[in-house]
Image 1 (spheres, helix red, strand yellow):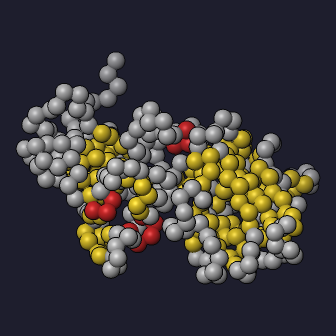
Image 2 (cartoon, helix red, strand yellow):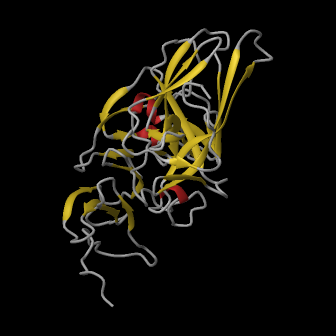
Image 3 (cartoon, one colour):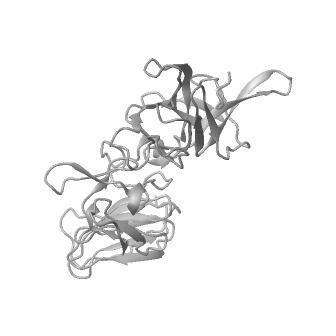
Length: 346
């Protein structure tokens, strides 16, 4: 049975090597983004096209002899690609190479160039802010795009934003990127205690867990040990406080399945910092409960989600303030959620 009208992909290599096939991902705007990888005569092409009609939105052509590969469709509507000759290129939502800054590792500072970063040649994103390369013969951490380069590290909010899909490379989307998953985060436990290493200072420990949001109800996800949760932090009011920014060592601000976060001032003083959580490198909502009453006057809790939150941390207390929570889409949670509110009250 024919489901739709067949159409040709927007490139036509002169010759095709045995086993060669195009790479296709799904972009932020719902269009397909594909590349033929190599074309020794005309040069390889990366193109965006309509999934329904095949009409081409834009195309980018490399040099004959080069190999183009798609790294990821990004949340800004563009796509990150790698050119085997010149390095990583960020294409905008219209297919144009964007102005980026190369090389946090450059001794004499960054150089503004149009889209290309030779320092990232052959590299792939390892997590939200760190890229890894084997160009030197062994795996090495070489780049933090969230810093001076600003290549987007958040994936397109689609079911197939990157080639090979999940962490096992099985050419399927990570669990939380599938349409039926609708993964979000909510506190599983929330406790405050005296820090044994810093007398007189309170620590608030929140353990964020993966939940699926279905029909207005939160339910914990069982068997989520391969799902990566990452947090990035910015706009700290205290420059002496260590936060989860692009300078953070690899692995320090990520966890699998759950994410434990200790809010503590340490010896640097009070601070406020904005937090953004990502699940499998896609920005995700964090849900917190709010006390209220139902139509019969009985007390209830309703959970509301927001894409970012501020952590306000002092010596005696830590409180969370959601940024623009969606108050029109409250959820229930019958199991697995902490009942403590974002401001720390029970």
